[in-house]
Length: 144
Image (cartoon, rainbow, N blue to C red; front, side):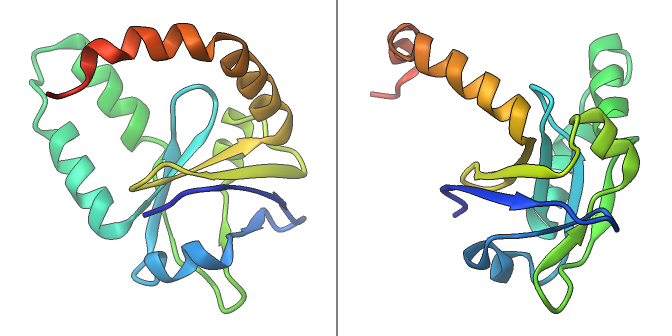
């Protein structure tokens, strides 16, 4: 599983070094795409195939399903982790996530999120202020 929060830099060639403990899980390649909340999602190839299948199975007659499918697939890019543990972030994804030079990489259990350092700080500050309210709302979703 992917867990933790890590600060890294993106180099001039649009490469970001992944945390050492994440690299092995991405040895077979990965897919980087737009995520929600202005971050990027990085899926190991097997997990991407699972997610992509679910998105592709959404009804084509639903405008929201078509929009979400376009959002996810149009920006998706296959990536390989290089010898020193870096992946390339295409310019369109950098622009979407407002990434300049510093990023925060966080684990999302079965995927990774890459955030602009500034966007992550704003999101994290907001979540810390409302965490009790959010937790209370989510208690209704817990399984018995």
